[in-house]
Image (cartoon, rainbow over the protein chains, first blue to last red):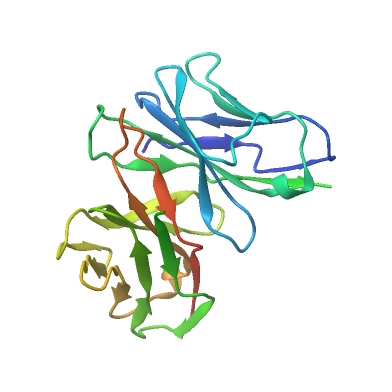
Length: 116
Length: 115
């Protein structure tokens, strides 16, 4: 069964450092997402990506964040200068289908980011 | 804005017990409602969904009914198993302009089932 894979499963980084979280979505999917969950809090939407551009982003997704699909298979989330409050579980998701399609989003297993 | 509220966990049950995990939502219009499950070490998986009022979603013995009048989508299972131990997330979704289709999640409820 096709699946979304995320690497690494756990990353520890020092405050102020750049970090790149990687995701390989399901190959024929068109829509890509990043979500995060700070420990004990809700899973929050960060950004959606379609046709090589951001289609929506939340207030959390400020200038420190960026996304790329550099090679047609990977989908990355970059945090330029990490802060302690960026510590969270980050989930990547992808979805197939057309513009208004009731298709399921498939999630990766998550990357736990710890900023120290 | 839109939001989802779930009962706090962990919920600890004995095998074969009846499960209810409460979920209520705040939203305008008519969102679709979902339950996702996360087993240890795995990603979020869609468990069931309902797209309109009074719809019942069901899968693997779990059920949830979309109740517009109470804005609820409670998850139930008649007889839980140890293998049901996981974190359960309630979520809602609107179709965005351009088809972005983002999900709004609750905090998740951890279920532990013991022998």
